Image (cartoon, rainbow, N blue to C red; front, top):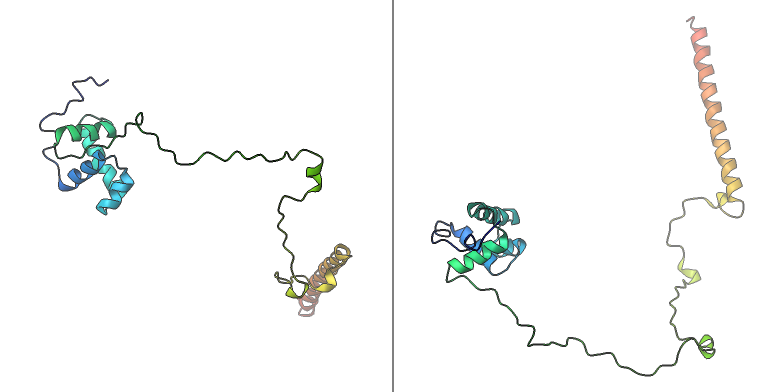
Length: 179
């Protein structure tokens, strides 16, 4: 557990920093994220995190927030985080909605009115089909299931018949050659 004395910066904590570490800590003191710091310094986010982790471990495993606070306290040229006193300011971003009197939609007349818009997509009959035709017209239509089933049965039967014919021919050639 950290005490109040642990959070006070020592005189030599930030003296032996490299240029990159100083730049990273300077931007971290401004409250920037690792991704923002990496973008500003044209380095990788992992390199920025490595610099921060080295400083955190050097100072005893403190948090990033504590590291930024110590850097601001130790270096007089470090930027301070801007703070807004929200108790004195009120910013209205959106005007309150208008309160006009509209009739209820639950009455009997509301059922007869068409107030909701409806989007319909109707294609012209001459536009043609957008999808390519995969199945021939013979296998499509009212009896498509029956026709396709018959076509599959005919194909399977012809494959089996050709297989039996090939085996019979191979057997006959073997017998003819005396094997």
